[in-house]
Amino acid sequence: MRVAIYDAHDDGFGLQAWPPTSADIPNDWGLIGIGAEWIPEGLSFATVAALTSVTVVAGSIYLKKRQKSPFRR
Image 1 (cartoon, rainbow, N blue to C red):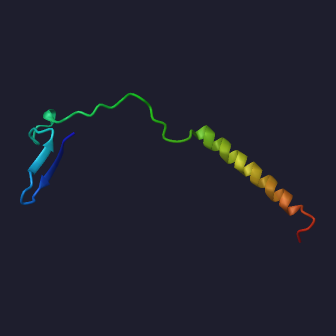
Image 2 (cartoon, rainbow, N blue to C red):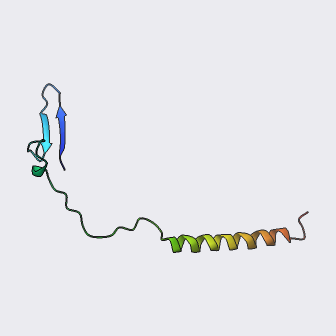
């Protein structure tokens, strides 16, 4: 990875880069260490399917009870 900025202000620093090597030689660029840890990105398919099933069943029961109410027309 190489990061570079240019400061064109009168008292600016001009081109600043990390690492301070040539932009034309990628082998001299910096390395970013990436860990081997897995980062969870959301719920698994089984969890989503189970939550969906529970929601559908609960909604059906709620709607059935609501329709059988003696006070509703």
